Amino acid sequence: GGSDSKVSRIACAPDNFRLRLVPWAGVATLVAQNGKAAPSVRGRAFCFLPLPAETGLPVHVNGYFELSSNRRDIWRGDDMAGEGRIRAEWNRALLEDVVAPTYARMILRLCRSIGGGEGLERYYMVWPGETAQEPWGGLVRRVYEDTAGLPVLWSLVGGGRWVSPQEARYVGGDWEHSDDVAKALLEAGQAVVKLPDHVRTGFASVEGAVLHADASFFRTFIKSAKALPACVATDRSRAIRLLSYCLGDLILGCPADTDGGEAYTCLVGLPLVPVSDGALRVFGQRSNPELFFVGTPLECDV
Image 1 (cartoon, rainbow, N blue to C red):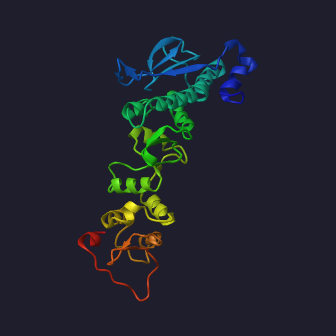
Image 2 (cartoon, one colour):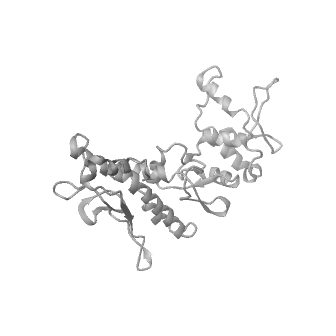
Image 3 (cartoon, one colour):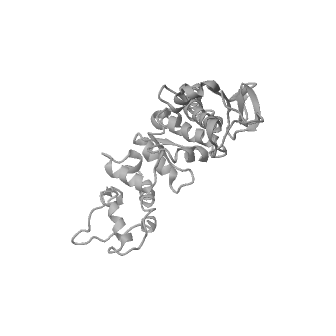
Protein backbone atom coordinates (compact mmCIF):
# COMPACT_ATOMS: atom_id res chain seq x y z
CA GLY A 1 0.00 0.00 0.00
CA GLY A 2 2.95 2.39 0.33
CA SER A 3 4.07 4.35 3.38
CA ASP A 4 1.52 7.13 2.76
CA SER A 5 -1.48 4.84 2.23
CA LYS A 6 -4.32 4.61 4.70
CA VAL A 7 -3.53 0.99 5.53
CA SER A 8 0.06 1.94 6.45
CA ARG A 9 -1.06 4.89 8.56
CA ILE A 10 -3.46 2.70 10.53
CA ALA A 11 -0.92 -0.09 11.00
CA CYS A 12 1.85 2.31 12.11
CA ALA A 13 -0.23 4.46 14.45
CA PRO A 14 1.20 4.03 17.98
CA ASP A 15 -2.27 3.68 19.47
CA ASN A 16 -2.89 0.64 17.24
CA PHE A 17 0.29 -1.32 18.01
CA ARG A 18 -1.61 -3.55 20.44
CA LEU A 19 -3.78 -4.78 17.55
CA ARG A 20 -0.69 -6.02 15.66
CA LEU A 21 -2.06 -5.05 12.25
CA VAL A 22 -0.08 -6.36 9.28
CA PRO A 23 -0.79 -5.03 5.73
CA TRP A 24 -0.57 -8.39 3.98
CA ALA A 25 -2.99 -10.16 1.62
CA GLY A 26 -3.21 -12.53 -1.33
CA VAL A 27 -5.69 -13.29 -4.12
CA ALA A 28 -6.21 -16.63 -5.88
CA THR A 29 -8.50 -18.26 -8.40
CA LEU A 30 -8.61 -21.58 -10.26
CA VAL A 31 -8.16 -21.08 -14.02
CA ALA A 32 -7.64 -24.65 -15.24
CA GLN A 33 -8.38 -28.13 -14.00
CA ASN A 34 -7.24 -31.38 -15.62
CA GLY A 35 -6.12 -29.46 -18.68
CA LYS A 36 -9.51 -27.75 -19.13
CA ALA A 37 -10.86 -24.33 -18.20
CA ALA A 38 -12.09 -24.40 -14.61
CA PRO A 39 -15.58 -23.25 -13.63
CA SER A 40 -16.02 -19.90 -11.97
CA VAL A 41 -15.00 -19.74 -8.31
CA ARG A 42 -17.43 -18.78 -5.55
CA GLY A 43 -15.07 -16.55 -3.66
CA ARG A 44 -14.49 -16.88 0.05
CA ALA A 45 -12.51 -14.86 2.55
CA PHE A 46 -9.60 -16.36 4.44
CA CYS A 47 -7.72 -15.16 7.48
CA PHE A 48 -5.12 -17.92 7.10
CA LEU A 49 -8.04 -20.33 7.59
CA PRO A 50 -11.26 -20.19 5.52
CA LEU A 51 -14.19 -18.18 6.85
CA PRO A 52 -17.76 -19.47 6.31
CA ALA A 53 -19.04 -16.28 4.68
CA GLU A 54 -18.87 -15.86 0.88
CA THR A 55 -17.70 -12.56 -0.60
CA GLY A 56 -19.57 -12.46 -3.93
CA LEU A 57 -16.20 -12.26 -5.70
CA PRO A 58 -14.96 -14.76 -8.34
CA VAL A 59 -11.67 -15.13 -6.42
CA HIS A 60 -10.53 -16.17 -2.95
CA VAL A 61 -9.03 -13.47 -0.72
CA ASN A 62 -6.62 -14.24 2.09
CA GLY A 63 -5.58 -11.40 4.37
CA TYR A 64 -4.62 -10.25 7.83
CA PHE A 65 -8.22 -9.22 8.57
CA GLU A 66 -9.81 -8.27 11.85
CA LEU A 67 -12.57 -10.82 12.42
CA SER A 68 -16.07 -10.57 13.87
CA SER A 69 -16.65 -11.80 17.42
CA ASN A 70 -17.95 -15.18 16.17
CA ARG A 71 -14.98 -15.45 13.76
CA ARG A 72 -17.29 -16.23 10.85
CA ASP A 73 -16.71 -13.04 8.84
CA ILE A 74 -14.47 -9.99 8.74
CA TRP A 75 -15.22 -7.13 11.12
CA ARG A 76 -17.42 -4.46 9.54
CA GLY A 77 -19.67 -1.53 10.40
CA ASP A 78 -19.90 2.25 9.95
CA ASP A 79 -21.63 3.18 13.22
CA MET A 80 -18.94 2.07 15.63
CA ALA A 81 -16.59 3.91 17.96
CA GLY A 82 -13.26 3.21 19.58
CA GLU A 83 -11.48 -0.03 18.78
CA GLY A 84 -14.44 -1.36 16.78
CA ARG A 85 -14.21 1.59 14.41
CA ILE A 86 -10.45 1.08 13.99
CA ARG A 87 -10.97 -2.59 13.14
CA ALA A 88 -13.65 -1.78 10.54
CA GLU A 89 -11.48 0.95 8.98
CA TRP A 90 -8.53 -1.43 8.93
CA ASN A 91 -10.44 -4.05 6.96
CA ARG A 92 -11.64 -1.48 4.41
CA ALA A 93 -8.12 -0.09 4.06
CA LEU A 94 -6.65 -3.57 3.68
CA LEU A 95 -9.15 -4.37 0.93
CA GLU A 96 -8.64 -1.14 -1.00
CA ASP A 97 -4.91 -0.53 -0.50
CA VAL A 98 -3.54 -4.09 -0.50
CA VAL A 99 -6.06 -6.59 -1.88
CA ALA A 100 -7.20 -4.42 -4.82
CA PRO A 101 -3.68 -3.81 -6.26
CA THR A 102 -2.91 -7.51 -5.74
CA TYR A 103 -6.11 -8.45 -7.59
CA ALA A 104 -5.14 -6.08 -10.43
CA ARG A 105 -1.69 -7.67 -10.69
CA MET A 106 -3.28 -11.12 -10.81
CA ILE A 107 -5.49 -10.04 -13.70
CA LEU A 108 -2.46 -8.64 -15.54
CA ARG A 109 -0.53 -11.87 -14.96
CA LEU A 110 -3.48 -13.95 -16.13
CA CYS A 111 -4.01 -12.05 -19.38
CA ARG A 112 -0.32 -12.53 -20.23
CA SER A 113 -0.71 -16.27 -19.79
CA ILE A 114 -3.49 -16.73 -22.36
CA GLY A 115 -2.47 -16.34 -25.97
CA GLY A 116 -4.44 -14.06 -28.24
CA GLY A 117 -8.18 -14.11 -27.89
CA GLU A 118 -8.41 -17.71 -26.69
CA GLY A 119 -9.88 -18.25 -23.25
CA LEU A 120 -11.40 -14.76 -23.06
CA GLU A 121 -14.72 -15.97 -21.67
CA ARG A 122 -13.03 -17.65 -18.68
CA TYR A 123 -10.63 -14.72 -18.32
CA TYR A 124 -13.40 -12.14 -17.98
CA MET A 125 -15.14 -14.38 -15.42
CA VAL A 126 -12.25 -13.60 -13.05
CA TRP A 127 -13.15 -9.89 -13.06
CA PRO A 128 -15.33 -8.76 -10.14
CA GLY A 129 -18.96 -7.82 -10.67
CA GLU A 130 -21.85 -6.22 -8.85
CA THR A 131 -22.59 -9.30 -6.74
CA ALA A 132 -20.04 -8.30 -4.09
CA GLN A 133 -21.56 -6.75 -0.98
CA GLU A 134 -19.90 -4.20 1.31
CA PRO A 135 -17.22 -3.99 2.42
CA TRP A 136 -16.14 -5.99 -0.64
CA GLY A 137 -17.81 -3.46 -2.96
CA GLY A 138 -15.10 -0.90 -2.20
CA LEU A 139 -12.54 -3.47 -3.32
CA VAL A 140 -14.36 -3.92 -6.63
CA ARG A 141 -14.28 -0.19 -7.38
CA ARG A 142 -10.56 -0.02 -6.62
CA VAL A 143 -9.77 -3.01 -8.85
CA TYR A 144 -11.28 -1.22 -11.85
CA GLU A 145 -9.45 1.99 -10.98
CA ASP A 146 -6.13 0.15 -10.56
CA THR A 147 -6.43 -1.65 -13.92
CA ALA A 148 -7.41 1.45 -15.94
CA GLY A 149 -3.86 2.01 -17.16
CA LEU A 150 -2.83 -1.64 -17.58
CA PRO A 151 -3.02 -3.69 -20.82
CA VAL A 152 -5.77 -6.04 -19.63
CA LEU A 153 -8.47 -5.85 -22.36
CA TRP A 154 -8.24 -7.78 -25.62
CA SER A 155 -8.69 -5.91 -28.89
CA LEU A 156 -8.38 -7.00 -32.53
CA VAL A 157 -6.60 -3.74 -33.39
CA GLY A 158 -3.31 -4.24 -35.24
CA GLY A 159 -3.95 -7.95 -35.64
CA GLY A 160 -4.81 -8.40 -31.96
CA ARG A 161 -3.20 -7.19 -28.75
CA TRP A 162 -3.90 -6.36 -25.12
CA VAL A 163 -4.79 -2.71 -24.54
CA SER A 164 -5.49 -0.57 -21.51
CA PRO A 165 -9.04 0.50 -20.64
CA GLN A 166 -7.90 4.10 -21.14
CA GLU A 167 -7.30 3.45 -24.85
CA ALA A 168 -10.20 1.02 -25.32
CA ARG A 169 -13.29 1.87 -27.37
CA TYR A 170 -16.43 -0.12 -26.64
CA VAL A 171 -18.88 -1.08 -29.40
CA GLY A 172 -21.91 -3.00 -28.17
CA GLY A 173 -22.66 -6.15 -30.13
CA ASP A 174 -26.40 -5.38 -30.03
CA TRP A 175 -26.01 -1.83 -31.37
CA GLU A 176 -27.41 -1.13 -34.83
CA HIS A 177 -24.61 -1.26 -37.43
CA SER A 178 -22.13 -2.25 -34.71
CA ASP A 179 -20.09 -4.41 -37.11
CA ASP A 180 -19.61 -1.47 -39.50
CA VAL A 181 -18.64 0.87 -36.66
CA ALA A 182 -16.14 -1.62 -35.21
CA LYS A 183 -14.58 -2.34 -38.62
CA ALA A 184 -14.14 1.35 -39.42
CA LEU A 185 -12.59 2.12 -36.02
CA LEU A 186 -10.28 -0.90 -36.09
CA GLU A 187 -9.04 0.00 -39.57
CA ALA A 188 -8.29 3.49 -38.27
CA GLY A 189 -6.20 2.04 -35.41
CA GLN A 190 -8.76 2.44 -32.63
CA ALA A 191 -8.64 -0.24 -29.91
CA VAL A 192 -12.18 -1.60 -30.14
CA VAL A 193 -13.08 -4.09 -27.39
CA LYS A 194 -15.98 -6.42 -26.72
CA LEU A 195 -16.73 -6.83 -23.03
CA PRO A 196 -19.22 -8.73 -20.88
CA ASP A 197 -21.71 -6.51 -19.12
CA HIS A 198 -20.18 -6.78 -15.64
CA VAL A 199 -16.74 -5.60 -16.86
CA ARG A 200 -18.21 -2.75 -18.90
CA THR A 201 -20.30 -1.69 -15.91
CA GLY A 202 -17.27 -1.86 -13.63
CA PHE A 203 -15.39 0.67 -15.76
CA ALA A 204 -18.43 2.98 -16.06
CA SER A 205 -17.41 4.91 -12.94
CA VAL A 206 -13.71 5.17 -13.92
CA GLU A 207 -13.11 8.47 -15.70
CA GLY A 208 -11.55 8.10 -19.15
CA ALA A 209 -11.81 4.30 -19.22
CA VAL A 210 -13.55 2.30 -21.98
CA LEU A 211 -15.13 5.14 -23.92
CA HIS A 212 -18.31 4.13 -25.71
CA ALA A 213 -18.09 4.62 -29.47
CA ASP A 214 -21.63 6.01 -29.64
CA ALA A 215 -22.98 8.26 -32.39
CA SER A 216 -21.48 11.40 -30.87
CA PHE A 217 -18.05 9.80 -30.49
CA PHE A 218 -18.13 8.39 -34.03
CA ARG A 219 -19.12 11.72 -35.59
CA THR A 220 -16.27 13.50 -33.84
CA PHE A 221 -13.82 10.76 -34.77
CA ILE A 222 -14.74 10.70 -38.47
CA LYS A 223 -14.67 14.50 -38.75
CA SER A 224 -11.20 14.67 -37.17
CA ALA A 225 -9.70 11.81 -39.21
CA LYS A 226 -7.26 12.79 -41.94
CA ALA A 227 -9.02 10.42 -44.33
CA LEU A 228 -11.94 8.02 -44.27
CA PRO A 229 -11.02 4.40 -43.51
CA ALA A 230 -10.78 2.49 -46.78
CA CYS A 231 -13.60 0.15 -45.78
CA VAL A 232 -15.88 3.22 -45.68
CA ALA A 233 -14.51 5.20 -48.62
CA THR A 234 -14.80 2.21 -50.98
CA ASP A 235 -18.11 0.81 -49.78
CA ARG A 236 -21.03 3.14 -50.38
CA SER A 237 -23.53 0.90 -48.60
CA ARG A 238 -21.37 0.82 -45.48
CA ALA A 239 -20.95 4.59 -45.62
CA ILE A 240 -24.73 5.00 -45.73
CA ARG A 241 -25.18 2.66 -42.77
CA LEU A 242 -22.60 4.64 -40.83
CA LEU A 243 -24.37 7.87 -41.73
CA SER A 244 -27.54 6.32 -40.30
CA TYR A 245 -25.56 5.47 -37.16
CA CYS A 246 -24.35 9.07 -36.88
CA LEU A 247 -27.96 10.24 -37.00
CA GLY A 248 -29.02 7.81 -34.27
CA ASP A 249 -29.10 10.30 -31.39
CA LEU A 250 -30.70 13.15 -33.35
CA ILE A 251 -34.42 13.90 -33.51
CA LEU A 252 -35.61 13.55 -37.07
CA GLY A 253 -37.86 16.17 -38.65
CA CYS A 254 -37.21 19.01 -36.20
CA PRO A 255 -37.50 22.57 -37.61
CA ALA A 256 -34.18 24.36 -37.88
CA ASP A 257 -35.14 26.98 -35.28
CA THR A 258 -35.76 24.41 -32.50
CA ASP A 259 -33.28 22.78 -30.14
CA GLY A 260 -33.67 19.52 -32.01
CA GLY A 261 -32.96 21.27 -35.29
CA GLU A 262 -29.95 23.10 -33.89
CA ALA A 263 -28.49 19.74 -32.88
CA TYR A 264 -28.01 18.93 -36.56
CA THR A 265 -25.14 21.43 -36.71
CA CYS A 266 -23.00 18.59 -35.30
CA LEU A 267 -23.13 17.06 -38.79
CA VAL A 268 -21.19 19.96 -40.32
CA GLY A 269 -17.84 18.60 -41.43
CA LEU A 270 -18.99 14.96 -41.54
CA PRO A 271 -17.73 13.43 -44.85
CA LEU A 272 -20.55 10.95 -45.33
CA VAL A 273 -22.90 12.66 -47.81
CA PRO A 274 -23.55 10.20 -50.69
CA VAL A 275 -23.83 12.05 -54.02
CA SER A 276 -24.89 10.89 -57.48
CA ASP A 277 -21.36 10.47 -58.87
CA GLY A 278 -20.65 7.79 -56.28
CA ALA A 279 -18.45 9.97 -54.10
CA LEU A 280 -18.87 10.96 -50.47
CA ARG A 281 -19.02 14.67 -49.73
CA VAL A 282 -18.81 16.75 -46.56
CA PHE A 283 -21.81 18.16 -44.77
CA GLY A 284 -21.62 21.95 -44.84
CA GLN A 285 -23.75 24.92 -43.89
CA ARG A 286 -26.90 25.56 -45.91
CA SER A 287 -25.88 26.22 -49.49
CA ASN A 288 -27.04 29.07 -51.69
CA PRO A 289 -28.63 28.17 -54.03
CA GLU A 290 -30.05 25.16 -52.23
CA LEU A 291 -29.25 21.70 -53.62
CA PHE A 292 -31.78 18.94 -54.10
CA PHE A 293 -30.86 15.30 -53.64
CA VAL A 294 -32.52 12.32 -55.33
CA GLY A 295 -31.51 9.12 -53.57
CA THR A 296 -32.00 5.38 -53.73
CA PRO A 297 -34.58 3.85 -51.37
CA LEU A 298 -31.78 3.04 -48.90
CA GLU A 299 -30.43 6.58 -49.07
CA CYS A 300 -33.90 8.03 -48.65
CA ASP A 301 -34.42 5.91 -45.52
CA VAL A 302 -31.38 7.60 -44.00
